[in-house]
Picture 1 (cartoon, rainbow, N blue to C red):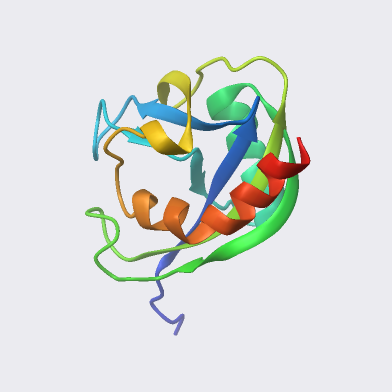
Picture 2 (cartoon, rainbow, N blue to C red):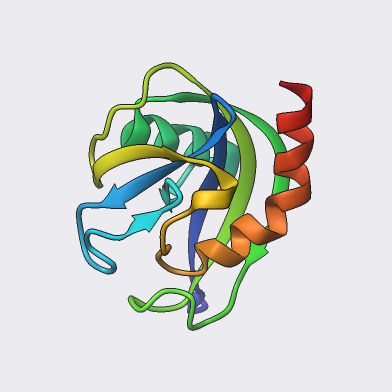
Length: 138
């Protein structure tokens, strides 16, 4: 018998033009709210491949993974059920363009973030020093 486990997701903290890339969600949960680009890992796909695919699908950007931010596994982090997200810090390349699950893509400074869906505010806080490291190199 197969074990019952949480669903695996990825999220990307993307720095582009010295700002963070956020999507406005097209679908529930948190429809219309801002979130990090991300989604479910597909069978046969690495988490690195998944985060690059999701970033491209939702933002139109190609990303370069810089570092692992962390693994987020609180069973209550997603109202659809228990998900575990592996979160990567990345830099973006290209012109942001909303697609698939994103209604819109916008850039925000760290000091001017909107209210965020899921636990994405905590994720960005956790990534703060790493984000500042990238910004200081730009």
